[in-house]
Image 1 (cartoon, rainbow, N blue to C red):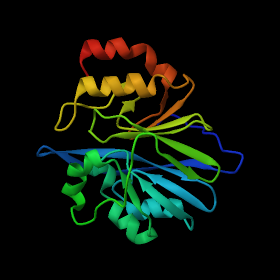
Image 2: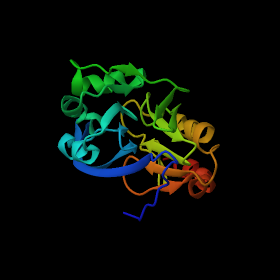
Image 3: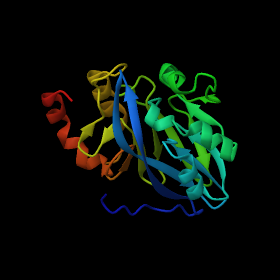
Image 4: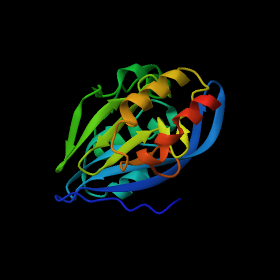
Length: 219
């Protein structure tokens, strides 16, 4: 992956990436995938964004810090399949947008999310606040988390280095994801660093000129 140098807040909030590997399953298919698990916090507490595949590895990166919450960008199994195990290791609560409960329930029907995410929510760790942006399209409840003070966006599977997330499977829709990206993400400062759910990072400025090309290709 490309080298990634991320800012640290005046209060010591930093961002770390853990790459985990496993299987994405939907519509009867399965695919081997590598996921980016993002940890944002200071020496005392942190958020885990998308607990994927390997709770032990995520917990090792967290260390002795309190996990203030597990934030789920969406409900696909490869982004939530380590949530329950990580909760058992840390006692953390999990948050998901309610429009993705049908996806969550396939994985953890007996362990509902502790809190619902909503567009406009603000979640604070240390001296950094994350703004919740509801960005449906890849999944109905997909959300991104924007840290304006750090100039960073955690985009889940909504926006990648190279364009929108996939919309060829159940509960996804290409016009919807284009609207979400156009209205919620491409309006952010162009220097905003986009930390994706899979693969390399990008910036808003690098992706913005290609919107018409995405429309032309249809994905």
